[in-house]
Length: 338
Image 1 (cartoon, rainbow, N blue to C red):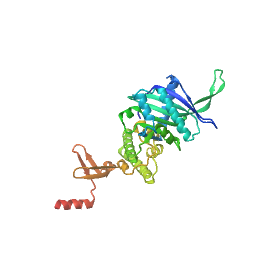
Image 2: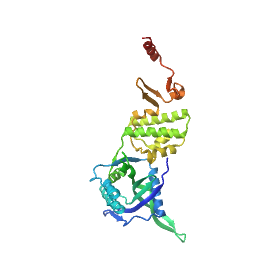
Image 3: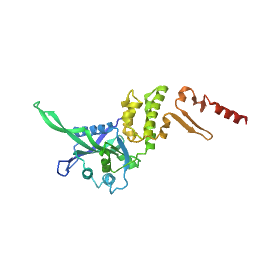
Image 4: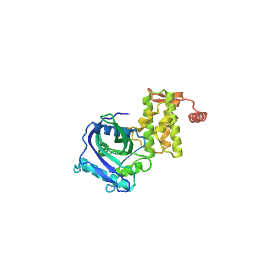
């Protein structure tokens, strides 16, 4: 998994305050935060916490910009330059408040909006962070009550790949799915159309597993074993209509070091949406090769390359098949005799 340096260009925080028996209210900053050590550390911790979560969805902005206005606001901010960063953040905070009130959410949060350069691109991060009570040690070595940001209470978060959005990519928006209402209501805030087709996601998963196995430099037999386990496990999920959970998949497929595979599957650059039901047909490349030419069509198990049943000669551009079944021999003999 690649490591990306985050360079923060803008950061602002607002607060959504909820108290029993009274309507929610917003506490809004007047200007962006100073980019001091604490601010930069907050952003790094936020990004790391987001990356550590496996249940992510991916998509693009909805086309209806009246109902889902964030895309329009971003154009006004980045293209037309008629909306500055603070004004953008305030409009987004008001939208968060309105939708959170509709959904009757109970917890208050700190809204974090950060514009970040990541390598050659840039992105906008939006998150709702909770807080927790803690104990600090004062200058006189006395215990003091304190409130601190609780990164484990990352209630909702989204990342907009602004470079991909400008470029017209199919998917440039990622968000945490969460449990219950957690992902759905924040998807409304972002205006995300969840592009998650099982066939496409399964193909990306198969390709990612194949690349991962290549990097592990396994013996042919071990490689076949891992891919067969992946196929059998995912095929069972597909038959049962059950969704993929990356952490569970990693434990089943690569029990020796599941965290390594889990990290690759969750990596932002893979853009695999968690929670899809595997397409069983798209799983076939895990265990077999299939190809066709002008006058032939062929399918064989991957393991055949290592058992000797199939031999590929790169120098002569030929495949040699061993163990030809009797019925095919007879058909070939008869055709040759004719």
